Length: 227
Image (cartoon, rainbow, N blue to C red):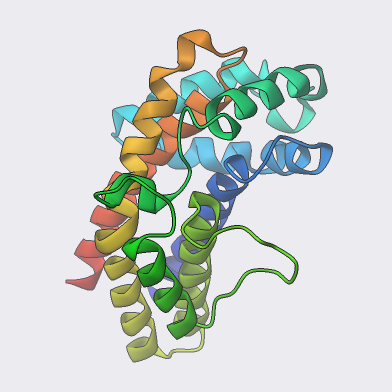
């Protein structure tokens, strides 16, 4: 694998992280549906190039959700209200929490130690919320955005032949995986998948399967690369 190929892999990782971030950010909209249609083929390609059963399960459900293999031509508007209801049932009504502290703190409450640690990670890597965004820092959508930014930064460093900087960022990303993402996001995905039978659509279980599988595969890839 040469440097160009490796940089392209990290660009693809950036796209994947940002897709998953948008899935869990808010109720679906016309804008996000357009984004999901444009990126579904990329996510499916990642899934089918893997031997991970979660990713394969998610890719299979994705075809059901979109109703066609031609993702960009899919009609998602007819299911948008049902998907919005699913988002509300899962996340707004707190069936499944989207905040790391709820999973990792003894109190099972928001804004605990992991939230503080996440803020330090962000600050030290020049990541901040968009002006006006009041999302709490350890929300899954922000943590995945952060992972996407790190992936992009790795790709940029490789293209600029700043290999030591790329290695430093990879180490940071692995630290965030081990100290944050892997400690709670797979559990969140499992909770979403467990609710599949009572939801109106399979949209969130599909992406939850793929996210859980992607995190397992991606963290293993990054660990091997760093070594």
